[in-house]
Image 1 (cartoon, rainbow, N blue to C red):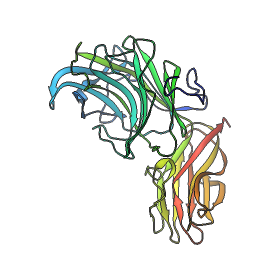
Image 2 (cartoon, rainbow, N blue to C red):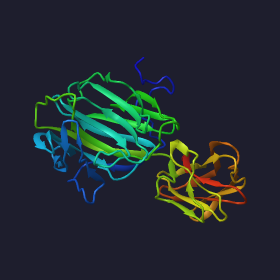
Image 3 (cartoon, one colour):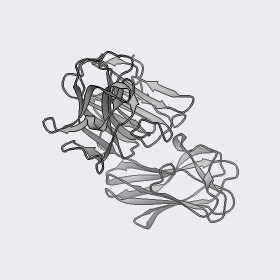
Image 4 (cartoon, rainbow, N blue to C red):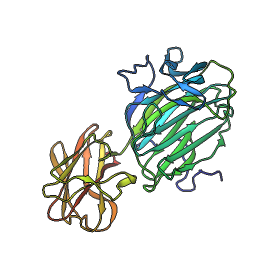
Length: 373
């Protein structure tokens, strides 16, 4: 069995999107608007190429975003490439694109997620998922990876493998489904790999999507230029909804004493704590799909924790669930607050308040879709 191929869970013939709703998409049907649109241009210098915004354009004949690969000197490199980097951050869900890669060696087209900016610098907690990487010298081979770039740098990988066709001929669909346990990778509707992505040690960041092509530094001889890599669309589907203190959108703290906790949060992210009277925290989480949901709050417990913290869930300002949480018990786990129905786009508020002595810890919350309601 090839490294990275799943034993459990079993492979699928295409992702099961029954519980998902389209949360973000660009069908690339109009000129790219860097200032007001959903993408930033890739602008770093990497491998043998300098990446330029001018190399990314809309092609009305293809109805696609096209990256031009050129033989030209720029910022000390002999070639130029480019890419699109989403302005939005995304986490768990199903990601898909349809791509036509270039013919000829020397290039590295890729579809991936990373927390860093369009200048190529790793930021946030340095996570990365590679939906595909292709060496255009070998257009029938693909690799999928999951990285945590913090020291010591960690990687799980499918390894390079043959997909059974020349990917430079025609259009091909790549997708990956990311959840708390791992990542499934699909090529033309067939699952090719499953890579475990546990809560520890890998970081479970919200990340930006990258659609890119750079000259590959292992192959200085690049020919058949100019050339193009074309992306027909990008789509992101979401089923469950998460909130945490690492993403300041929707998270607020009230009262005194809040600081970063020494205890790790969910998915190797940070946890916040306060041991002061009047401390409370709040998360606002919006669901994409209508249905029945279970609401959870992540509990990180240790000696000195507040025994009777009050956790509440509200829908449109009306309370739908409440539970007392013991932060003095050691360990970490998801605690069920209750169940609720939701309509598409509805916003929920999680509140956590200190009640009595000891510390509360504000970390992550989630709404897990369990049915259509």
